Amino acid sequence: MIWIHVGEAANTRAVVDLAHRMVSARQGCTVVLTDVDGLASIEGDPGLIAEALPVDHPDLTEAFVQHWKPDVVVWTWGGLRPNLILSAADSGAYMMLVDAARNGFERRRDRWLPEVPRRLLARFETVIARSQPAHMRLAQLGRPLSDIEIAAPLRPFGRTLPAADTDLTDMAEALGGRATWLAANVQQGELTTVIAAHRQALKTSHRLLLILQIPDSNHLTTTTAVLRKRGLRFALWADGEMPDDNTQVLIAETDDDLGLWLRIAPVVLIGGTLLPGDIICDPYTVAAHGAAILYGNHVGQHGDALNRLLNAGAARLARDASDLGTAVTEMTAPDRAAQMAIAGWDVTTQGAESLDRVIGLIQTKLDAKLKGAT
Image 1 (cartoon, rainbow, N blue to C red):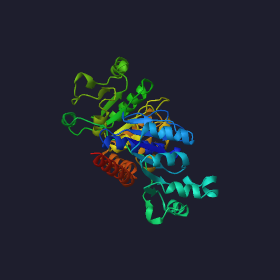
Image 2: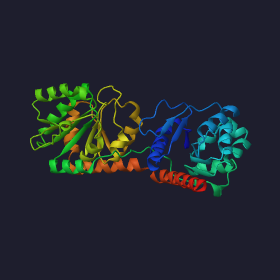
Image 3: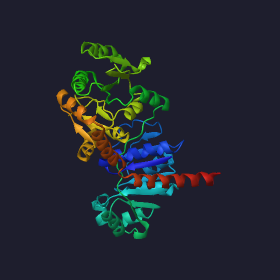
Image 4: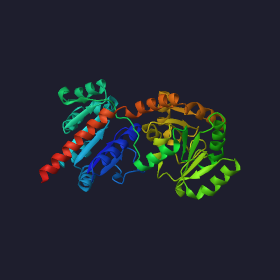
């Protein structure tokens, strides 16, 4: 059992990604996640639990720690809560303060009652600061410099989705090097825009294949009707059909094989961004598979991620069908897609060393505890 606390709301995604990676790396591991505002939900691995942070009263913090019985506590950023930290440390959990920032220790109490953070910092076996200023601030608060590591800040990263090797081999043979792009999680209201863009791109690249992934099989009838009306030849992945030289659109129902499509297509449109909607494929996951990214104006909760990728040259905004068609034509050129893919990879691997360091420490402590128990 690992308890990870998100001290900095702006970095919630990075810490949740850390939790996902930890659950994937260690069989039987469960992670309880807390933050200052309360995590409404956590999607993905079943080993993750969102829990409300208790009020910092000794009775409540003691009850919280006794209920979860964490083997390792990972507190991020700062904003230490005295009773909660002491309850956790007294329980025998291995205590880690990671991604510590200078502004995580600038509250009024930290300035006027320096003995409180000094006492709390002493209860952490491992302390990792995200910068030199943070390193010096922790030293001012009483943590010996030799007991403070410095590592790059934790950053969000994209998870790699599974794909069957046989499917990859079969699709590669069927495509034979054809230019391909993926429209992922396309909502019904976006369908005409995506099809119009594909028809425009076909004028320049006649063998271009669109993998059209719709999130709901109930919309299949409508989707096929629109494609027939537009004169586009299609194949149905769910029926076991493979694209041949005459296929212009491959329809994939649901996102069960999204990992396959992200490996096949060098250019990906993130559906749900052309019109307001709730279903948006995670941009970091797309970038982690080596794909160049296209998206519309409606970015929802992924605004920060798409801005990072856009500024890095890994993503491009497409406002309408004409803009999207032009972008697809330009980005399916191998050299252009490769440049954007490399830029996206750079974004998703920032902070990887810090992530590996934290996970390595957790693994070591859990291994030692298991060895001691036997």
